Length: 278
Ligand code: PAF
Image (cartoon, rainbow, N blue to C red; front, side, top):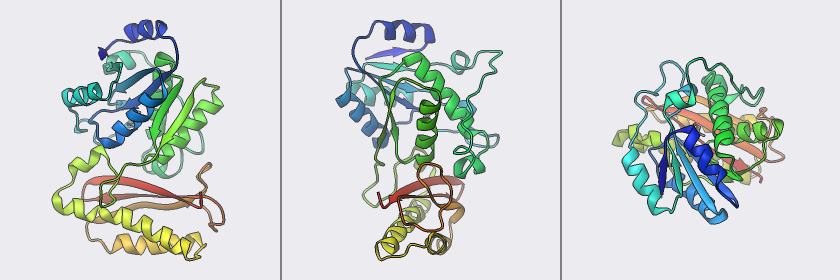
């Protein structure tokens, strides 16, 4: 496994590769969720490139960019075990040199949910992912279903801007009790970790009610909201039942629907989702 830190070297190495290239972009502090992406990419491509870059452009003022967990040595050891060929770890100066002024904006789908609560977040994500795609030129790029809106934004960018690659969605990896894996879970105290289960329980409730025939999206949102509000450490950012492509809120769940939520547990903001009626 080779670690590459400059754009110039990454481009040169890419130029020498024949066959399919799988790419997994990450911000590091890897967990089983990331490793699942890596395993899918390893199985489906001749060469596997993983990037580790904590992208300052996708964090808003007052968000956790400075304190975002980082452990590059551990990350590299994990990636080596998974048979990764190249790890691209550029510096912020390499990615955003002085005078950088170009941004990628995906309208509409970026403006709802996470985008409404975190203005500018998806502009930062789309810009860095577009840059990484340009540098790495992957055949296939792998993203987790846990960040459902990110996946939708990236698929839209790839389609709208005619990018020549396949975006592959990989199912969310969960702890045995249902909590979705996230680097931010490391912020939770033991008491908060227990409280965080309310996200999975609320999604389970939506699934159960829908299975029993409840098709009113408002009723489902209300039931989920009451369940989350019964957890004293939880504070809701949003509970959404939306069209899985446009992210427009639904009135009736009479077709596939993305049920997603963002909840603060103490100071930690967690997101999760399921799809009904796939
Ligand atoms: O999902 C992430 O970790 C990040 O948003 C990504 C896609 C690596 C872009 O910085």
